[in-house]
Image (cartoon, rainbow, N blue to C red; front, side, top):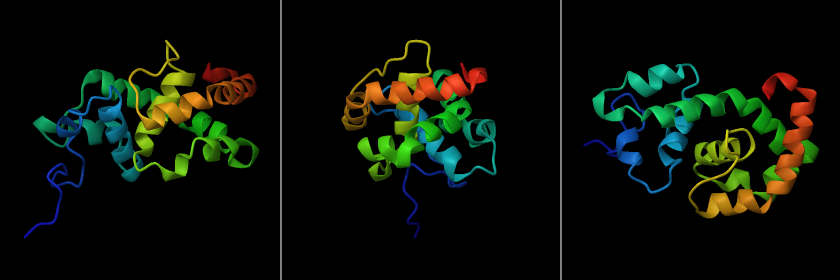
Length: 148
């Protein structure tokens, strides 16, 4: 008898289609990013598209995750600056869905509209410290102009 959750494929990957039924516009992207972070030895494209028909994420989720991955060094630097001040302030280490938090931080700091759509506890914690996050992001991008 298998103890594998129903949303995990035989390859150990999350069923993106099932998870995307959540109301957050970022939930599927966060789930895909979590899977990528757990299986870094595989590429994002392989994780997203090789696991079968029902597991294929939307093109917008895939694009958001790809862009978030490009910005992970910046996001981690921002969160870990000044002895992890912002990571502690938004309680990042307590989140079960770190992928969702990364995606929301990317959306707030680096996306075209620089705004988080939707709601929820993670959004509230991030937006509560938006000013400090933006300040650290500005400092990071001034030292790394190729990111902008």
